[in-house]
Length: 93
Ligand code: SF4
Ligand code: SF4
Image 1 (cartoon, rainbow, N blue to C red):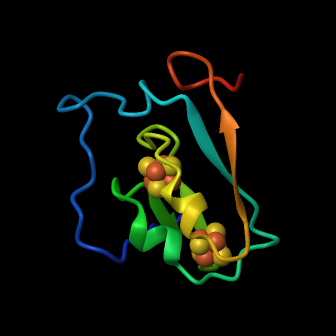
Image 2 (cartoon, rainbow, N blue to C red):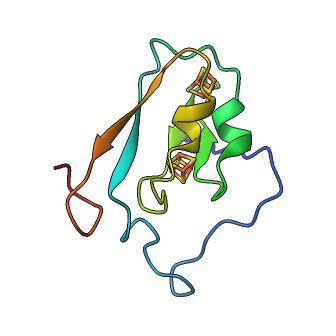
């Protein structure tokens, strides 16, 4: 898969901050059938966790996503929803 990044934020690195999703209490779930490819979520993610797939749809890196839910807040068509996670951040509540 070709990974495309469009803004100049440095990707978090394993070993520096570790798995940065570890402390989250919620995570985003993205529905591409509602997505209009506006890329607002991509440019607003503070962790550069959202890349584009070959078709231009955003893909969220759940390993580094910290669950701030800015992507949900900026999505104009509600294509992103919030899912609660269990302590540790990698399993849904
Ligand atoms: S919840 Fe925050 S860190 Fe995770 S993808 Fe959305 S904007 Fe990025
Ligand atoms: S903000 Fe919403 S509509 Fe725009 S690219 Fe992201 S998920 Fe798709």
